Image (cartoon, rainbow, N blue to C red; front, side, top):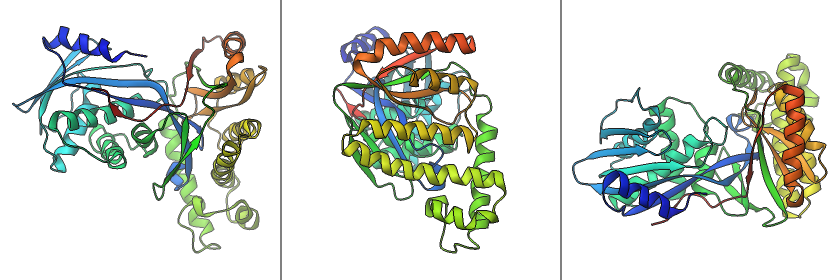
Length: 386
């Protein structure tokens, strides 16, 4: 992980002085609860110990000057400008947060800032949400004001939806802002209530395995799956007049009224309804320390995503199968939207080295692709370090 002193030294090199603040915001992995968020359901992410960090000093001229240590690029804009940058797309996440904060009349100041981080890009670990939440904290530090963490998450989400133009759910920004060390958060995406659930502080690791397959079908498939879920609700409401979303439907309801649905729509609904139940059961399993039960729920989640929701792919399935064959693995599943990206596995610490070697070799043999592994622990959410 990046040492806070490193970014301070980099800031001095770029801007010729010492920063007055350093902030961080973590990436995330969703342990279970996939494609439930847009159905008012439950998700179960953890913040991870890969993060985005921003060091800065305030300016009094309303100008924001940025340096990306990752891209070795400068960007500059005046507070209040609503124009996106084509040349420096990474800066739009910072610009967007500034626009949203200005619209809410927060006392913004310009700043010189350097942006760095360890969240792998295009990995499904939410580097964009981490950058947005870190940017919000940086504007707070420069302007000497403070925002409550849940509101910080909502404002960061608005920046991505209204400025960047990605119609994301709330999970990524929420866990980046409110994550807790050695805990996952069970989030109710309807009410935004959440429960921290303890994860073992030693003995097991979260291992994220990147298939390194680009997720090219995600946008069209996401829109199609979302429409199918909405169609299911429209048809089921005839028999279940109180429902607003699949969150309100049980497996017993689907058993009783599934004839109202097209077979494909029924499978989509069955995944969402059963996945919500798996999230709630996962909370019980972890609270009781039953890692075996939690791992079995992860495995069932992958099967449902593969067979009922049909968002897996050869690479994800190969990665999951290779992971489950390793002694010391409690469970493994795809994580994220699907059609590529990453899997997440819960692995005994003593098996991590064996896991990376065995899974890497088997995945290469089956797919011809190299895997990338990130060994993580559940991290604290966004915070000011200096």
